[in-house]
Image 1: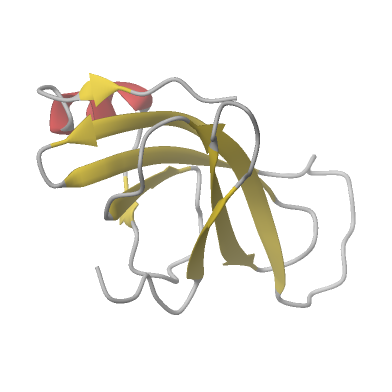
Image 2 (image 1 turned 180 degrees about the vertical axis):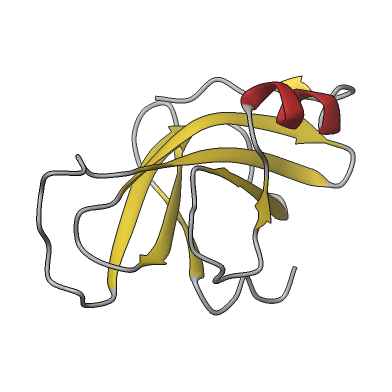
Length: 120
């Protein structure tokens, strides 16, 4: 995958340690600083990795400035880097080119023949 686009930046780097973990970081643009991002699952497919991430909305009674911000999460995996397809739950705005899924069950149907990857 050449680019992951307008609202998504995937940055992958090597975390040097005794276990040679690889850092997998996701970052997306959000409508304001109240949103958070959490990586829930990583699955290995024939074509690469499928990653399920969830956008966590802020409490409705909190006020935030209406300024575009970023939400990110990083996990560490022991597998080598491969092309990544991102599936995201909970995004309520219509930006970006990542695939939106309604639930983890919907994601599992898409990735039914994949191998789950452990991450820290």
